[in-house]
Length: 161
Length: 161
DNA sequence: TATATTTAGTGGCATATACCACTAAATTGA
DNA sequence: TCAATTTAGTGGTATATGCCACTAAATATA
Image (tube, helix red, strand yellow):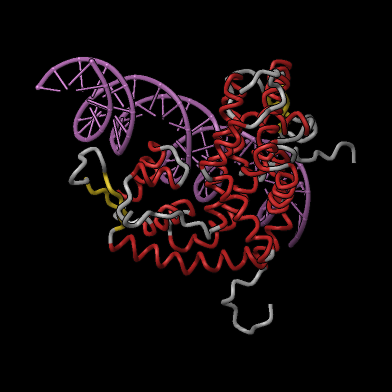
């Protein structure tokens, strides 16, 4: 009963990462029977929704580094869920698409995902969940990054900017 | 104007990870002059706040796998910011603490962190930020994991549980 | 048109994070 | 007290994710 270490919960960034680990773990457990990870489901789903998007476009949508996306896709390509198709008109571009096998897996995982999502909404409350997603999606937008970058950090001199 | 791929933003887990990447990036940029990453700052700060916590305790507080914590700590130990001290009474246990150098770095980074935090609160709004942290911290609690696990996913039969 | 700049992707390297198998130490129980 | 079980950490392996350097291709510019 001496010190009882508490979490340092004032940093939004740390709080976000911590919650992300927790929820990631929870979803992961539900998705486990599929043999794929939560992140991979997100990826397959985004690919399914953004038909024929290039790697660049996909990376932007996912707010992810282009090379990170490339790396993350490797196992999915290796295992036949996803394929890269060179663009005809711009030879730099590669378009990402699900294979039939990948689409089947994505649909199969969606059944499991629905369970996780239902559990989440029951645990947190539908309103709360909706509000949280709105806030998170707002933070993910490019306009938020701009607002953040432009925002005052309290150390500016009086100079006009 | 053919398809305009939109993000798939109904999955709270994906939304959380996406927002985490975005905000992580934003904080990272502000903390960059220190030479350490955002996650490392979180780690140093949590260690500073939980004096003499064991790896196990720290992992629980951070909602992190024990081995993941061990791995993440490696570079910080290697570079002299953190040290592990074997516990006297329980020889399995190792207590984690900042070196004087580590403490100095943590304090130095806190100056930068305050700027990032200020920018964040200005960009999102103080109320919103506060509410978001509360929601995230709630999700990070063990009680939430229990609620999630116990929650209905809509597929239960009428059996009593 | 020839050159400079920008854009898309790749590969290497480093950190972040999880799971599994394994060791050592503490705790339980017979 | 000795065997069975639980707990704390470690090391290996795999995915997740970012940065940098580099190539190739497209675009802009002189």
